[in-house]
Image (cartoon, rainbow, N blue to C red):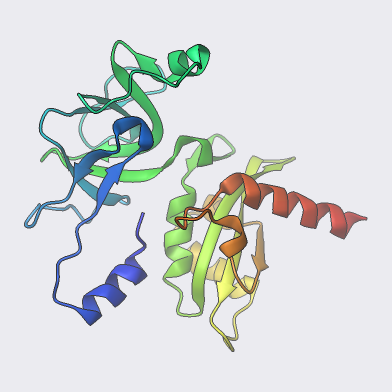
Length: 234
């Protein structure tokens, strides 16, 4: 998703309209796209990614595979002519994501009453704290809204008491006077106590965790945090 700070910077530079979309390789790749004038709801936390393309069916499903009502968060499931036939020579992997022509994306989203989709997070990036589902993207969005923060990534880490806990890696603006306690307070003002990162680690850059197109690879983030914890306990 494009963070709001970047969208605001874009809007300040040009009157051109910024329209987001959604896709994945298994869908060749486009699924939905914003259109000028789409009635976006501000009360839904996710990024609006527009309406499904013509001929594309999208539903939001529970963990049991049942279709959910509009406005409820669940897995984005897709059917349409652009959906892949399967992974090449990977029958078991194909069975895990394809069922009767429907592709289970592993992405969490919401569909509003106008048929617009909102992307929340990757299902595997959900953080479960004392049974509560916490979206890493919500914490990232709040941290990015702090004027001292340039870039941030949040991941889940195991925790003895709560099951999992959010951990944040933050890149500060050069010369910014901002410590972990200030950022925790910033998150606590906007979200519940479950969302407050148990650790905030400051780095000069987060590029080491991104692939060639700028997508953050959370597994690399978790490996880094584990290594930091191992070194600090040695």
